[in-house]
Image 1 (spheres, rainbow, N blue to C red):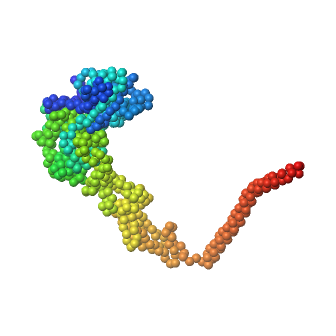
Image 2 (cartoon, rainbow, N blue to C red):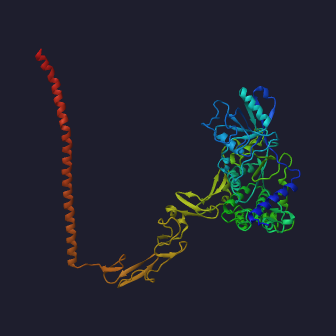
Length: 635
């Protein structure tokens, strides 16, 4: 028998767990294909019936709206697997946008849509290659090269049945075909409030999918909190968990991936049981994030979940090796969350009993009513309908707004004017210098962001939550850059110096770490005033040195010189000064004379160049005046 690596075993076990979970827990569950309506406007012979299109799991469906466009079917490369020739050949040339019709096969659905978008199409319809119920066109596996274009798709697309697609091809051979794509009924709006839920994960080591989830949470936070505070929406976060089959409960794989005796599991983040974090670490943090929302919701602060998840991702990342309970508690403290209540909600992960919170999560994964099973992450559900399209701020906001009845949409759906005011309370949980009223809390359209500020040309660096430090030459203008400073007898010394970009350095005459500085006794430590006959007296920040007799102390040379020189010395001094002065005066006179001579010669040179011209002009005038007289004489 061959050996199986721990990584492959992890993958095999994860697949087995998912299969068992689906088979045993999803008896009534199913995958639901979300659809939009399609009606043929022209030709009239086809407009008696409404057709369905299966909304793709990428791009931007026009939830709540509709599109009327002309159908185009390419003469070549009807599969759309290659870039179309020409400069946007399917871009509209009249008032109607073009809806590109393509055949299924040979390449990813998303690639077909991307090539259609690049060619100028406003929407893409893919014709199924077999007669079957409609399926959802999904994005390619994250391991493929599709990451370069999937997130850039900004048009809607859908899969249509083979029979409908073939009838459109036939109609195109005899004339124009105009369709109306309608998403107005794709998002139900049963009441004045939109209920939506996000199935996500606290793991940040699962590649592009994890990055997509966290980017969405960070960017959508501002919108979500405004809608929640206004009572327009009810948001609920969810987390997928699996369970370990009984024969494997005591295995090292289940022990590392599960809590509560195998009842709730998550795959190993690195897919390697021997390194990094374990699956049970993920389950435990997922549970904490559910309880953060529950406890915050009880105090009518449900929107704090968005702050917690965003801050946790920044401060407690697996990639930074800070993913831990201690880090999570620091985040909760900064947001003023009651840790005792949250810990009580989480329960004991080592207990051999059902966890009420996680049990409800497993039950919620099963689809009921019009909603299908939740099997992938991330999944967004709006008004009990699974959202289709890319997980992006503006696309999701449009889907939520479509969940309101007409004329009942909140202001956020009608304008981009956003105001969260999250920094007004407790400074948003960010760093703050109360002495100088400087804060790292920034109120943006994404909600509150903790970023070290730039104030009056002074840049602060740090994590924005617990620490910000002034850096750069101008840092000493604000609170002495956070360094030691003291004033005595009108003299001020500071450990902040513009010669350093950062850090605190005690000034000359002091020693210390820059946060505290003590005076150096230069006299006692024999750092100065070592010349013969010198006497040293220490003072704060310096020293005084005096020489005996009538001598003068020279600090740079640490020596004493005679204060009064001899008569001969004075004579020599005055003689030297006289010679220097006379030389200076002579040089000045010589300079002035030469400058004047130079200027005179330059002026004469310039004038000599213009004088001939003047003479020439005078001669010409005389010539013209004299010429008529000679003619008159001849007559």
